[in-house]
Structures are given as structure tokens and as C-alpha cells.
Image (cartoon, rainbow, N blue to C red; front, top):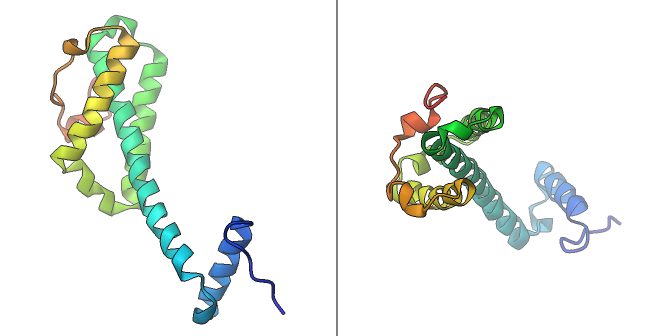
Length: 146
């Protein structure tokens, strides 16, 4: 008799076993409650990844614009890498595009980027615009502030 993997004790074995049950149509043996939880968490992690790259990218755009004399190749690499990662996120999960069209989502992550830019540049928060000064096209454009 096959040993049933415990979600709490061995997550990897549990995931492999659940995949096997799905492949073989063993519906009654699926751990539906935990599968639902994991699928929901997976969707949230995709959104969090996009949010993180967006926030870091906008912070670096602000730093480049408001402290150009301190710009380094590291900042340029961060701009490029974040843009690439955002593009990867959008290619892998096209439905994430809707967040880039959501003004509330943009402003939420802009506020955080603004706060972080103020900390990193040691400039007063009031130095930076209260609303995002960039369009999504500018933010994602590899030539913008490059």
C-alpha cells in the first residue's frame, strides 16, 4: 500500500504525489483543501514578483533622475535587470498586465519606491513627486533614463 505524503511534514513529496494523482485521474485521493491553498498562493507569488521588480525599477528611475551625479553601472544594471524580469513576468503570466493598467496598484508601489529612493539618496521625501511622474511606457522603455 502506498504511503500518503503529509502536506505539513514533506511538502516536496506531497506535491509530487498530488501531481501523480492528477495525472492518473485519482480524484478521490487528492488533498483538495491544500491544493486550493497552494494554487491561490502561487497566483499571489506571481503578483508579488511583478510588484517587487516594479518597485525597485521605479526607485532606481527616481534615483537616476534626482541624483544623476551618483549614477553607477550597478544602477544601470538594476534598471536593465528589472525591466527584463518584468517582461519575463508578463510573458509567463500575461494576466499580470492588468496591474500595470491599474492606477491604484501603480500608486501603491510608486509610494514605496518614492520612500525607498528618499532613504537611499538621503534626500527629503518632498524632493520626489507625490504621484508617479512616469508612464508605464517610460518605465518599461530600456532607453528611458538610460
